[in-house]
Amino acid sequence: MATQPTRSPAPPEAETPRRSLGYAWFVVGVLTLMYVFSFIDRQIFSLIVAPLRRDLGITDTQVSVLQGFIFAVFYTFCGIPLGRMADKRSRRGIIAGGLVAWSFFTSMCGLAKNFAQMLVWRMGVGVGEAALSPAAYSIITDYFPKEKLATAISVYSMGIYIGSGLSFLLGGIVVRLASTKDLWMLPLVGGVRPWQVIFLAVGLPGLLATLLLFTVKEPLRLGTKNTVASAKESFAYIFKNKGTFLCHNAGFGLLSLVSYGSAAWVPEFFRRVYHWDIPKIGLVYGSMVMVFGVLGIVGAGRIADAVRARGTLQANMLVGVFIALAWIPVHFLLFLAPTAGWAVVWLAPACVFAAAPFGIAPAAIQQMMPPTMRGQASAVYLFILNLIGLGLGPTAVAFCTQYVFGRDNAVNYSLLVVAVTASILAAALLWSGLKPFLRSLDRLNLWIADERG
Image 1 (cartoon, one colour):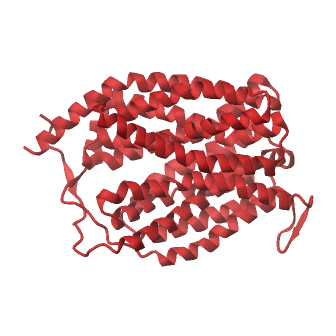
Image 2: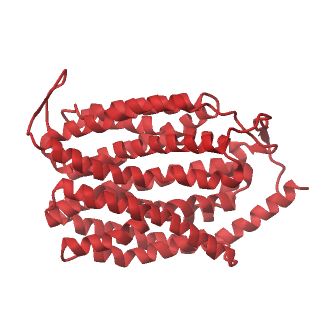
Image 3: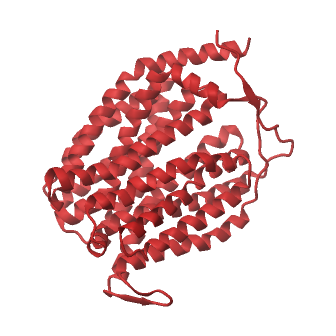
């Protein structure tokens, strides 16, 4: 029998009825737009690697530190205290503060004169963006009944792919417009290069978008009659299921490494190997990410639900294994494509697989954890996922290009080596986690039975 847990009471259940679903969906739309802005500001880096290297005098590895590692460190570590703040203070205010911060620091990236300055501004972008999702999830949860919550959060999560796609699409357009001059003279700023204009252009709209948040009313905090597990109890339960958590978090973390590493360097792959210009890359890659990214995250979830409905309880993990294995031949076909046309053909399934894990991975966490511990377990998962994927993915590719192959136009081989290695390891870890996952479900059933007395 499980030990009787020590818990603190959850917030009392609100007696006031929720607002209309129509307004709730409006709120989701506003928050999704904020998410879109965050990914535009985050991903625009990938389109301007070449001019950044030239004007700041930096290497691929330094670019990857700015693009992924330093952002990920501040994004993940600041997400925990900002998430706690969202439980106590105005969530709308936290999001507004974060939006102003990351938009301001994105614009400041356009004024950076060297690597150190850009490093500081990217830290600020990471801190600002860390404020969004914890508060947004909390607001959405308080606006929707539980039977519609998953759909609402899925719509919000689509902001990842809409934002990433738009960062390439709009970024390509801005690059084309900004590149009509070698030097732009701006009021109060002076002469700036085209890539600096891009940072200023994508950062300023976010500041204006803050006004939209005034249309979002802070909802009542709705709780349940259940209790919330203490951090000590949650981590003790996670430790009892360490085999499952290790295989799950590391396995999906490695798939995230492939996704983030590819997103960071695929634009340079098309520029260096096939000599495409940035506007063309933005149009093609942006369209692919928006269409096939959404298809991937929705499709993987539906497949996992169908497999689970047939009695395979570890369906989310099993679909993760399939994604890792099926992705391997796509890596070879994409990064060794003889022409740009064939590379575009194989970019479509690559975008599907890149997005697919991000729905089934958190679903597996929700499935195996007691209701009172799911939030804390999800926080651990997201912490590890972002450190491995966003922190190491772009840097691993850059390291291979600079130190293993030693030439810029070998970025396709670097992408291939990193992607195939990580995919194989991910498949092995997720496969190894199938039986531990079933044992974790058994422990969950015992925990529930014990709770019911």
